Image (cartoon, rainbow, N blue to C red; front, side):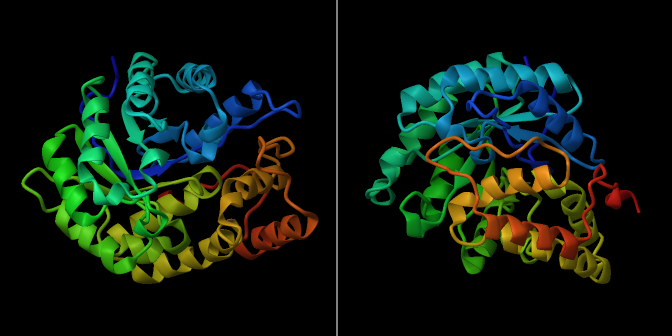
Length: 321
């Protein structure tokens, strides 16, 4: 049973990284330290594990359960824990969901199955079947991860509305639609339903612009590095303090420009490398097919650290200023 039964997905939610040893095994000690570092930032509402930032695509179910075990052991009752559900088949997704609930998760982040990438947008009943199968397997609230329509895995607006109506346990949408106009439509439509569904932005490359549209929170891998800045920005936007929001965004800008540069797939690779440069993680190791960043990329990360005024010390509590 979760210790946060009535928790609603909202606020600032970092998605943590998963350190590996040189032999590609999970570095449990480094992961525990990373959890403590991120969770120590004031103002967080939850943490997410077993998502993109944890390289969930490269982790089997036993390893995902080990991540949950380490997380619950380290953090206990301190924060709600959102667990990713990443699978191409709905039956396997349901199995992952059951295990995550048994292991202590507070909510589940449901990724779109890759099996829908070749035309699934034309068959909305497939998305409905996927979420219904998962919902039947768990009592936990679900967060629908909405991708860009351009990649074939996003849910059209009509499908999103159909999903949240048909599956009441969908309590939030992690919106990564990539289109500011569609993003605003999603926020207005979902958060003003008779049963409001929270929109958590994951447009971390343009976070301030996204937040001012009215998102009720953010769920971001960049929070594994700059959770303090994200909390500060979220609070400034919520307080309608534009000068402070712009000043914080000026610090965030060089970081996200470095993280989300082409190739986009290296974003969490870069986050690991930056945390190593900041003295917060051991040398960055990623599992194949990801590979070590080249030297010029690492130099750009060093420049971004300097431009943002980050230090090798623990993250400052900017939100409390």
